[in-house]
Image (cartoon, rainbow, N blue to C red; front, side):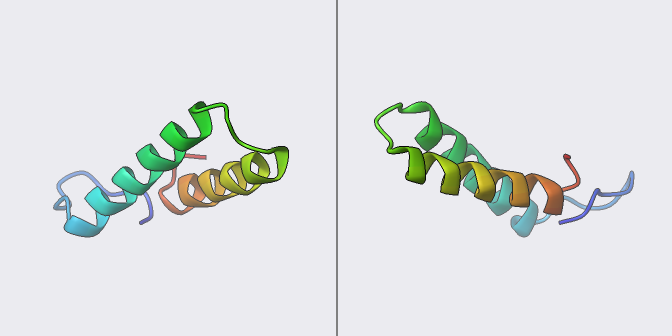
Length: 55
């Protein structure tokens, strides 16, 4: 999802991306991850934020 223009409807896809991002951030905050797992999750978060126009 790119940055939405004002007045553009909020879609199921928008909601799904937000929930995926939330889940990744929650998983990252657990602290019981290996450094490799942490790196993978951080990369996924960065890619999703870029796709959502949050970077």
